[in-house]
Image (cartoon, rainbow, N blue to C red; front, side):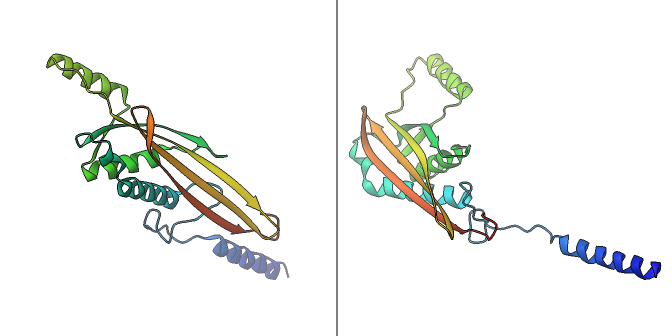
Length: 188
């Protein structure tokens, strides 16, 4: 009888462990259709969609061309204020935008790295030149709005960007990304 109970316990434990075993990790396209979607945070698909949409909107507006500045125009990408409930690294947005704008040849973004800036000043001084300041600045804000009812939880992230020249906005854009999740029977 003890042997039978022992075998049943061992069998049940083996089944439980087999059920808890996980498959090997696999690669997926970053921000692609197989990426995990969460209403708890901004994920790579959100950063990619926001950056792509805002860059396309800025370029199609003609705002950079309308300044009449020689291209590539030096642009300082300033602070993106995070007004969401989670800490996020806004570099995931600003770096993607900087790279995309630089590839167009219309904009040359200026680094905010202190050592890079110091080296640029030194080289300009050594050559007897003045270091040209950026002509355009880009700033922004990320805001979230959360809603829920009995069945669903929804979060909308709103990405705002603004490009300024001579102290006034020459372009403003926004991208909204909304995600929904069904509530489980246990609340969330």
